[in-house]
Image (cartoon, rainbow, N blue to C red; front, side, top):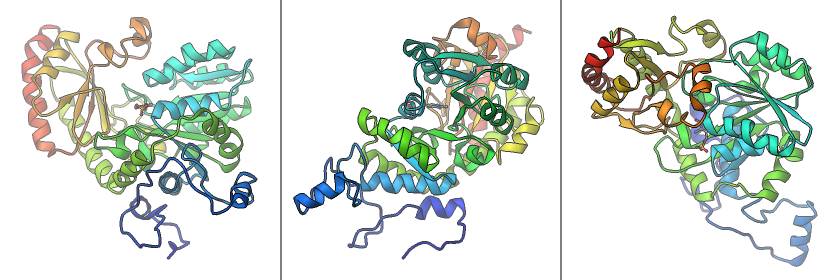
Length: 403
Ligand SMILES: *Cc1c(COP(=O)(O)O)cnc(C)c1O
């Protein structure tokens, strides 16, 4: 039976979207662990390669488990087409390199995930593609940068790690006037809390590693857009360069999606409560959480997001020493550079994820030595707050001495 034509809500789509049952009527989606596919006749193989019939050919090009995940993500995002990749970085790389050519220009927000920053700052130049970084929250800088022809605008909102926002509608409008394709890395918001395509973006990328698997098991990535761009631009690149997702990992992510709304809702609720708790503590100079009224872009958060998300950024007084004391004293929350997991995690961006961009660039991004990123998981929020309170007590002498 096909799903009803009327619009279905996210929780339903996450469980039911894209299910391809075989004639055995199995309950769970099948992980089709096959690299290739066979043809009944030589003629059927020819018809397949001539695009006269639809038949799977090879799992680098397509696979039924990948199709299920692509269809489920399209339904959730409201996108026409999706291609899956082995990692989130392969998704960003494929979205950019499939579209760009020598002589093109890229404008990007400065606050990007480390490897996205590396692609723009270090890789594109090798192919004769120029770039400019802007402060994502400053529309005047976007306007100035987009006064010349641009092939791609790349942005992330909320950004990693300090949760700065970019006005996706306003930047998309400026970008389109400059001829650019707008690519939004929507990992932090998830498709549940922010819909970049509805806001005017052209392409959305995900690391499925984060909230979609959400249980720390597999890596994966996705690129979503309209059918024409995916078929004409992205698909030939993905098919021939081979960054595709393993069907086993696609199956793990499909099962992860079934609980994603429950997890993201619960984790976001805890994150908001934790941000409120942290803001009261004397050891903390600043808490960043998009939907708190003290976030400088609070109004924009309410306009383009339906929730604040699962991450909280905080800045301890007392710099690196206070931050390390705090992190080392946590007994439930793990130290890890991963995020979006059911297990809560903290990371110190200045010495890990943002070490290689250098002190000058970190200063521009507002990443101080006291900054800590917290990814809130599914543990009981009261236990997390107890853990954080004890750890802040441990950091307190250093933090308060710094005042
Ligand atoms: C994790 C992440 C990526 C990269 O995803 P991988 O699956 O680790 O390759 C890209 N962008 C953002 C915002 C991320 O958090």
